Length: 63
Image 1: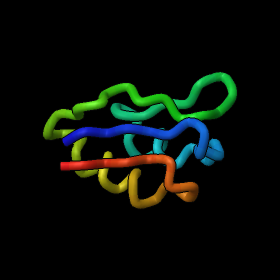
Image 2: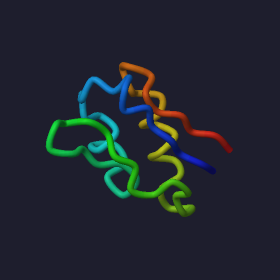
Image 3: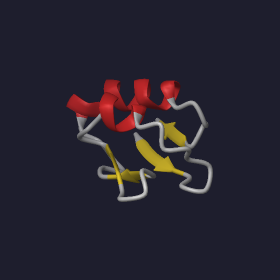
Image 4: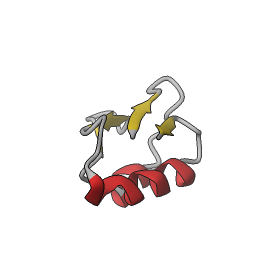
């Protein structure tokens, strides 16, 4: 699995950081930061869910 984020599209809702805190965080401006571009098995389900919940479509999760 590979996780990427488009910070230009991010609106800072924070659902990613709340849903998968081991994979995503927010910077001082509230924009997404990817902590684990290749999450381990324990974080994959949460990363997928975060990708689905992102209101701006800034997250891309590929298998």
